[in-house]
Image (cartoon, rainbow, N blue to C red; front, side, top):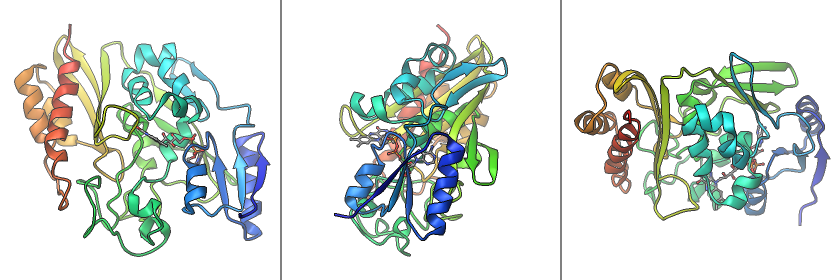
Length: 328
Ligand SMILES: Cc1cc2nc3c(=O)[nH]c(=O)nc-3n(C[C@H](O)[C@H](O)[C@H](O)COP(=O)(O)OP(=O)(O)OC[C@H]3O[C@@H](n4cnc5c(N)ncnc54)[C@H](O)[C@@H]3O)c2cc1C
């Protein structure tokens, strides 16, 4: 068995600098938060780390708080904490519901916000040792292979789907992601954090090699804003979304003032359906409007040979999410 060096970081800055030093010495490095994805990757051989930088020894990044301008959530907050926090439950229902929908209670008790949004794809080719784009190769085996769980929007050259349930909710709430690296701190919008394979087929986000996600900030949501996360799975529990939808709607009575609608499980990034958002603005929420929004959500869909079954799921998920947000 390969020997691994463990480094217990005491701050995000120290973790970034330890990663940089190890890489300068030619070592492969991985950050470990909850470890629920990373340790499986090491076992599967999809991550060949020589050095694991343990983030659980960091004291910061574990709180959720409001400072008047919004809600700041530390990157090391667990998904259980996120789903049960009173501030999140009261103003950010879609985020609480998305966190609560992830995997199993055991996973949610250790998996972190940062680890969830930076988890690697669960495509069976990538996880089973195929030399695909995600593994540094130059082919996506799903195109002519088993693609029942792959992308319908935004695919090419890789057709993975982004695996996080939490990420679409963060995009829908216009979250700002906070990043630390050897050159200091920076902020990036949730929407710009995730990158399509056409930009970089090997990675799912804009973090550079030694950078870490330290937390997110969600701008204050108005008291007339309501939100929900609706997830459809291929079994009752404990798995990723076939299709998910995070919907955040500001409404006056039942009239939509503006809407953010972001899909999970259908694209290599959390997928905003702007045509649905534009259609909803000014509409009265009701069955016909919700149904039409679900149909509009399919605009631009390009199913592969075996994933067209997701199309009615997308329409149904959007329709259900919008009806969930009707006043009363
Ligand atoms: C049976 C099962 C079911 C699952 N179902 C779902 C599901 O329904 N929905 C869903 O969303 N997910 C699901 N997952 C995935 C699970 O949610 C992730 O494994 C978990 O969220 C990762 O969080 P973590 O803190 O354990 O990350 P880790 O395993 O520690 O890290 C994951 C990746 O992120 C990197 N990383 C970690 N922290 C940082 C950071 N701060 N900055 C930069 N990079 C970092 C690591 O290097 C690693 O590559 C499931 C997993 C399993 C095993």
